[in-house]
Length: 139
Image 1 (cartoon, rainbow, N blue to C red):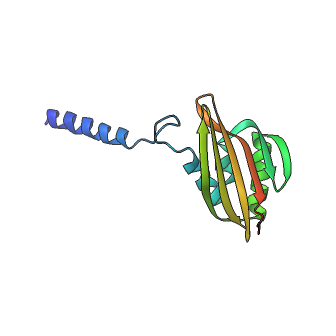
Image 2 (tube, one colour):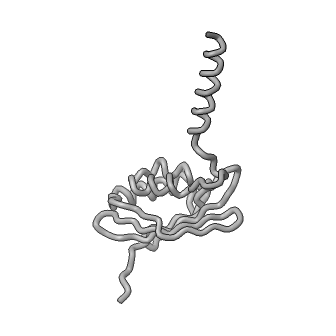
Image 3 (cartoon, rainbow, N blue to C red):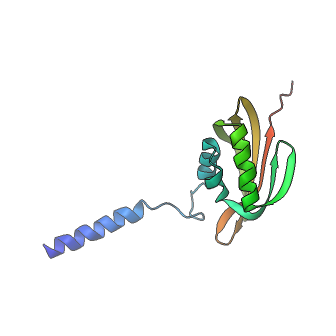
């Protein structure tokens, strides 16, 4: 019986560890998955957990160098005015300790282009620049 409990416990631990979320540096982990989710949900609080302590934020051509808290309030205000309906990453790139994504946000009946720059700092990726601009149609 004791041997069975030991084997069962070991198997359970292996199963649980196998299901643990990947760290930011694990191969195959896409840091843009949670970020996209929070933008799509209009969740400024959870999105701001990815913000660097100081970042550049541009919302509809109004640009600010902001603290993490200021940026959260700016994004929260934007989401309050433009309720997100959908968000899709359309392009991603990376180099060394930087990642970049371009996406399309449908919010408040309008379409926006979202640009996200991430830097790797203090053991994780952090949003260094977030830009949300109205999508313009070119004919």
